[in-house]
Length: 110
Length: 111
Image (cartoon, rainbow over all chains, first blue to last red):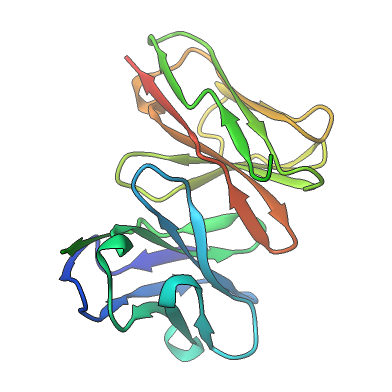
Protein backbone atom coordinates (compact mmCIF):
# COMPACT_ATOMS: atom_id res chain seq x y z
CA UNK A 1 0.00 0.00 0.00
CA UNK A 2 1.11 3.53 -0.69
CA UNK A 3 2.31 5.46 2.34
CA UNK A 4 4.18 8.61 3.25
CA UNK A 5 6.26 9.02 6.37
CA UNK A 6 7.40 12.36 7.75
CA UNK A 7 10.21 12.13 10.24
CA UNK A 8 9.45 15.04 12.51
CA UNK A 9 6.09 16.01 13.95
CA UNK A 10 7.19 19.31 15.46
CA UNK A 11 10.26 21.41 14.63
CA UNK A 12 11.30 24.64 16.33
CA UNK A 13 13.97 26.84 14.75
CA UNK A 14 15.28 30.36 15.10
CA UNK A 15 15.10 32.79 12.20
CA UNK A 16 17.96 32.39 9.69
CA UNK A 17 18.50 28.74 10.64
CA UNK A 18 18.61 26.14 7.89
CA UNK A 19 15.71 23.74 7.51
CA UNK A 20 15.44 20.17 6.35
CA UNK A 21 12.21 18.20 6.77
CA UNK A 22 12.43 14.50 6.04
CA UNK A 23 9.95 12.55 3.93
CA UNK A 24 10.01 8.93 2.80
CA UNK A 25 7.40 7.26 0.65
CA UNK A 26 6.37 3.77 -0.27
CA UNK A 27 4.91 3.45 -3.75
CA UNK A 28 5.42 0.89 -6.47
CA UNK A 29 4.65 2.85 -9.61
CA UNK A 30 5.64 6.08 -11.29
CA UNK A 31 5.66 8.60 -8.53
CA UNK A 32 4.50 12.19 -8.36
CA UNK A 33 5.66 13.91 -5.19
CA UNK A 34 4.48 17.08 -3.51
CA UNK A 35 5.04 19.30 -0.55
CA UNK A 36 2.03 21.28 0.64
CA UNK A 37 2.02 24.04 3.24
CA UNK A 38 -0.82 25.16 5.50
CA UNK A 39 -0.29 28.55 7.14
CA UNK A 40 -2.29 29.25 10.31
CA UNK A 41 -5.93 29.78 9.43
CA UNK A 42 -5.38 29.22 5.72
CA UNK A 43 -6.01 26.36 3.33
CA UNK A 44 -3.52 23.93 1.85
CA UNK A 45 -1.23 25.41 -0.77
CA UNK A 46 1.20 23.68 -3.09
CA UNK A 47 4.81 24.47 -2.21
CA UNK A 48 6.51 22.40 -4.90
CA UNK A 49 6.10 19.25 -6.95
CA UNK A 50 8.16 16.59 -8.70
CA UNK A 51 6.88 14.65 -11.69
CA UNK A 52 10.03 13.80 -13.65
CA UNK A 53 13.34 15.25 -14.81
CA UNK A 54 15.72 17.17 -12.57
CA UNK A 55 15.46 15.60 -9.11
CA UNK A 56 16.19 18.93 -7.45
CA UNK A 57 12.97 20.87 -7.48
CA UNK A 58 12.64 24.53 -6.61
CA UNK A 59 9.40 25.86 -5.20
CA UNK A 60 7.96 29.08 -3.90
CA UNK A 61 9.40 31.19 -1.10
CA UNK A 62 12.92 29.79 -1.42
CA UNK A 63 12.01 26.18 -0.70
CA UNK A 64 13.50 23.25 -2.58
CA UNK A 65 13.27 19.48 -2.40
CA UNK A 66 15.44 16.65 -3.69
CA UNK A 67 14.02 13.40 -5.02
CA UNK A 68 16.38 10.51 -4.24
CA UNK A 69 14.88 7.44 -5.87
CA UNK A 70 17.27 4.97 -4.24
CA UNK A 71 16.29 6.20 -0.80
CA UNK A 72 12.59 6.71 -1.57
CA UNK A 73 13.01 10.18 -0.13
CA UNK A 74 11.83 13.67 -0.98
CA UNK A 75 13.22 15.97 1.71
CA UNK A 76 12.27 19.63 1.90
CA UNK A 77 14.98 22.25 2.46
CA UNK A 78 15.38 25.97 2.93
CA UNK A 79 18.78 27.59 3.63
CA UNK A 80 17.48 30.37 5.88
CA UNK A 81 14.01 30.33 7.41
CA UNK A 82 11.88 33.34 8.28
CA UNK A 83 9.27 33.85 10.98
CA UNK A 84 6.62 33.80 8.24
CA UNK A 85 7.51 30.18 7.45
CA UNK A 86 5.70 29.11 10.61
CA UNK A 87 3.16 26.61 9.27
CA UNK A 88 2.37 22.94 8.91
CA UNK A 89 4.09 21.10 6.07
CA UNK A 90 2.76 17.97 4.39
CA UNK A 91 4.65 15.64 2.11
CA UNK A 92 2.43 13.76 -0.33
CA UNK A 93 2.49 11.21 -3.13
CA UNK A 94 -0.04 11.14 -5.93
CA UNK A 95 -1.64 8.47 -8.04
CA UNK A 96 -5.14 9.77 -8.62
CA UNK A 97 -5.87 10.53 -5.00
CA UNK A 98 -3.18 12.12 -2.87
CA UNK A 99 -1.66 10.22 0.03
CA UNK A 100 -0.47 12.68 2.68
CA UNK A 101 2.00 12.29 5.48
CA UNK A 102 0.91 13.22 8.98
CA UNK A 103 2.52 16.63 8.71
CA UNK A 104 5.34 18.53 10.39
CA UNK A 105 4.45 21.57 12.43
CA UNK A 106 7.23 24.16 12.00
CA UNK A 107 7.56 26.99 14.49
CA UNK A 108 10.05 29.77 13.79
CA UNK A 109 11.18 31.89 16.71
CA UNK A 110 11.64 35.59 15.86
CA UNK B 1 -14.23 33.08 -8.05
CA UNK B 2 -10.72 31.92 -8.72
CA UNK B 3 -10.48 29.09 -6.23
CA UNK B 4 -12.33 26.18 -4.71
CA UNK B 5 -14.99 27.30 -2.26
CA UNK B 6 -16.67 25.32 0.49
CA UNK B 7 -19.65 26.00 2.70
CA UNK B 8 -20.33 26.23 5.49
CA UNK B 9 -16.87 27.00 6.86
CA UNK B 10 -17.91 25.81 10.31
CA UNK B 11 -20.64 23.42 11.33
CA UNK B 12 -21.64 22.28 14.79
CA UNK B 13 -23.96 19.29 14.92
CA UNK B 14 -25.53 17.31 17.70
CA UNK B 15 -24.77 13.62 17.68
CA UNK B 16 -27.28 11.86 15.46
CA UNK B 17 -27.95 14.87 13.26
CA UNK B 18 -27.49 14.74 9.48
CA UNK B 19 -25.18 17.29 7.82
CA UNK B 20 -24.47 18.35 4.23
CA UNK B 21 -21.23 19.97 3.15
CA UNK B 22 -20.93 21.77 -0.16
CA UNK B 23 -17.99 22.17 -2.53
CA UNK B 24 -17.80 24.50 -5.53
CA UNK B 25 -14.78 23.47 -7.63
CA UNK B 26 -12.81 25.66 -9.97
CA UNK B 27 -14.83 26.13 -13.15
CA UNK B 28 -13.91 23.59 -15.80
CA UNK B 29 -12.11 21.18 -13.49
CA UNK B 30 -13.29 17.67 -14.29
CA UNK B 31 -11.93 15.89 -11.22
CA UNK B 32 -13.09 16.55 -7.67
CA UNK B 33 -11.84 15.00 -4.45
CA UNK B 34 -12.97 14.93 -0.82
CA UNK B 35 -10.55 14.47 2.09
CA UNK B 36 -11.01 14.27 5.85
CA UNK B 37 -8.42 15.87 8.14
CA UNK B 38 -8.64 14.91 11.79
CA UNK B 39 -6.92 17.04 14.40
CA UNK B 40 -3.15 16.60 14.27
CA UNK B 41 -3.27 14.39 11.18
CA UNK B 42 -2.73 14.79 7.48
CA UNK B 43 -5.71 14.81 5.13
CA UNK B 44 -7.06 11.37 4.25
CA UNK B 45 -8.79 10.52 0.99
CA UNK B 46 -12.53 9.93 1.07
CA UNK B 47 -13.84 9.87 -2.49
CA UNK B 48 -13.19 11.03 -6.07
CA UNK B 49 -15.38 12.15 -8.96
CA UNK B 50 -14.68 12.56 -12.61
CA UNK B 51 -17.49 14.74 -13.90
CA UNK B 52 -20.62 13.24 -12.31
CA UNK B 53 -19.20 9.74 -12.01
CA UNK B 54 -17.94 8.65 -8.60
CA UNK B 55 -14.88 6.63 -9.57
CA UNK B 56 -13.49 5.82 -6.13
CA UNK B 57 -15.26 5.84 -2.78
CA UNK B 58 -12.88 3.51 -1.00
CA UNK B 59 -12.01 6.09 1.65
CA UNK B 60 -15.53 6.68 2.95
CA UNK B 61 -15.36 5.43 6.55
CA UNK B 62 -18.90 4.06 6.77
CA UNK B 63 -22.20 3.86 4.94
CA UNK B 64 -23.27 6.98 6.83
CA UNK B 65 -21.08 8.95 4.41
CA UNK B 66 -22.45 9.72 0.98
CA UNK B 67 -21.19 12.05 -1.75
CA UNK B 68 -22.73 13.21 -4.98
CA UNK B 69 -21.97 15.47 -7.91
CA UNK B 70 -25.10 15.19 -10.04
CA UNK B 71 -24.23 17.73 -12.74
CA UNK B 72 -20.48 17.32 -12.73
CA UNK B 73 -19.82 20.61 -10.99
CA UNK B 74 -20.91 21.29 -7.39
CA UNK B 75 -20.50 18.37 -5.00
CA UNK B 76 -22.15 17.61 -1.68
CA UNK B 77 -20.78 15.37 1.06
CA UNK B 78 -23.53 14.14 3.33
CA UNK B 79 -23.02 12.52 6.70
CA UNK B 80 -26.01 10.82 8.28
CA UNK B 81 -26.46 10.26 12.01
CA UNK B 82 -23.23 12.07 12.87
CA UNK B 83 -20.97 10.64 15.56
CA UNK B 84 -18.28 12.36 17.63
CA UNK B 85 -15.56 10.62 15.64
CA UNK B 86 -16.79 12.43 12.53
CA UNK B 87 -15.44 15.70 13.97
CA UNK B 88 -12.77 16.86 11.51
CA UNK B 89 -12.04 19.32 8.74
CA UNK B 90 -13.49 18.17 5.43
CA UNK B 91 -11.46 19.35 2.46
CA UNK B 92 -12.51 19.49 -1.15
CA UNK B 93 -10.06 19.74 -4.05
CA UNK B 94 -10.43 20.02 -7.80
CA UNK B 95 -7.76 18.99 -10.25
CA UNK B 96 -6.21 20.60 -13.26
CA UNK B 97 -3.85 18.15 -15.01
CA UNK B 98 -1.70 16.80 -12.15
CA UNK B 99 -2.22 19.52 -9.54
CA UNK B 100 -5.01 19.55 -7.00
CA UNK B 101 -6.28 22.88 -5.69
CA UNK B 102 -7.76 22.79 -2.22
CA UNK B 103 -10.63 24.69 -0.72
CA UNK B 104 -10.56 26.20 2.80
CA UNK B 105 -12.40 23.24 4.31
CA UNK B 106 -15.44 22.82 6.51
CA UNK B 107 -14.69 22.29 10.19
CA UNK B 108 -17.30 19.91 11.55
CA UNK B 109 -17.72 19.56 15.31
CA UNK B 110 -20.09 16.90 16.58
CA UNK B 111 -21.19 17.37 20.18
